[in-house]
Length: 487
Ligand code: NDP
Image 1 (spheres, rainbow, N blue to C red):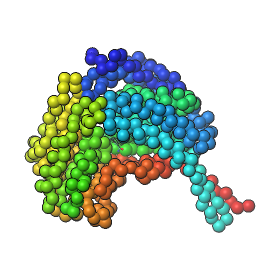
Image 2: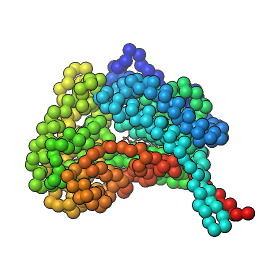
Image 3: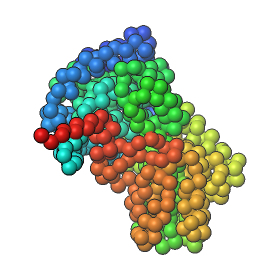
């Protein structure tokens, strides 16, 4: 076994305020994606660990729900302060654990994790009881905690997505069990340390590590778990949705995407090219919102293609700890194999690889890592498998289109409907197209420009429900109407 640190770190479960090993005492090794070296190991939790975590969350439930919303908001701010004091550590751990560049883990992951807690603290403080007056009575709509919840997250934005769930869930008075991806446990563990240091009551937030099948699935099916917030792949989401539905749990599913980037003939290419490249390859294309299909209006197809490939070729791929690195490694050997298989499929389907699709030369230290250069494919039909299936890696396909209707038709031609972006000098033309796209979110002349108050989520096979702002507060609570007749 190659060990990436001086010492192999044992990451434990956190149940009822205690760090505990898995009951079966089995472990899963955790590898640094950029080197392939082991960096830590986590418990391979099973049903009994889930049972203990749910019990701890249930025990903490009553006391936590009794706090006022302002008291809970204060706790969120306290967690934000403690997270902020470990900002650099979060960025380094996330970069090590995911293989993403440190610059990105600082600007995106560490920053948003702190912001998520602060944002929801504010939202919860501002939450008002709604009143509806009738002729002879008044309705008061109060939001009560749902109870014990399961928060299940993927590997691409580990703490960013976990904190996006934990903050509103506990802020609304619930207690939770987190199940992060077995591939990226490091910052979830740090969050639990922070929560302990902040002094949050034991059992409000619990964490179990392990596989989706052995730890995630029993958690979703557990009768005492009343809601499930899941972010991950569409196939897994379908299983999670089915398991949760059996006992009528509240469920939020944030799933996969195959997002279109639409470049209209009036687009100022020079102005927007860097943003379009970013939308294609941020986090090695492993962001659910990345635009993996670029639809370009015929008149500017060739010029756009040349400028796009030039910009992609300038991206610096390599050591994630180097401040100048733009692209790091993929998450795992299995994921590299998947992305590589799509490069091969693109050729089989008649596409031309304009750039990328190979293993970069970046030095002996990274030989065991999961590396592939950013890949641009031309000449595929928009109906091809490469152009319609989620690859979730650094591979984009380019497609020409004739007019706005054609762009909308191609954009809507997949099972997914998460997000999209439109690049144009005419924002009303862009808005008209946006309204006809079957997606939950569309950006015009920008991408991943997030206001945390707005709804986040997808249509079709990209998910169920919305998170963000008041939508999260609604999901993580039960609305109860109290109708009082006038005296
Ligand atoms: P997966 O669906 O493989 O896994 C997500 C989480 O679910 C992991 O913690 C996994 O555990 C767990 N899990 C797996 N099976 C089950 C099960 N039967 N019951 C309960 N939990 C289970 O997704 P990835 O981690 O591979 O993440 C990539 C996917 O996430 C992409 O499709 C991407 O589009 C999507 N995503 C969507 C976002 C959105 O907001 N819409 C945002 C970010 C990513 P483990 O892996 O440890 O076995």
